[in-house]
Image 1 (cartoon, one colour):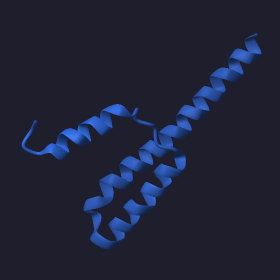
Image 2 (cartoon, rainbow, N blue to C red):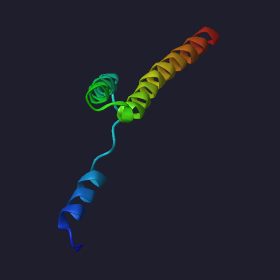
Image 3 (spheres, rainbow, N blue to C red):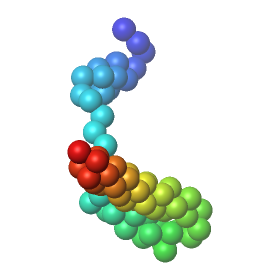
Length: 77
């Protein structure tokens, strides 16, 4: 048992659940919160907003690629 028993408990909770990919709504909510942080506390939170924007754009890119590949596969069949 460690000196901090809550750490062991937290590790067990994390290990028991699979990590889910954030949804488009989750990322949008995060972007809104990051924008509020930038507005309130200045540009030091800008990298967080940029990273969330990259993730949001990556979702669009993945969905477009998947749709394109599946469309090509349907046409070839």
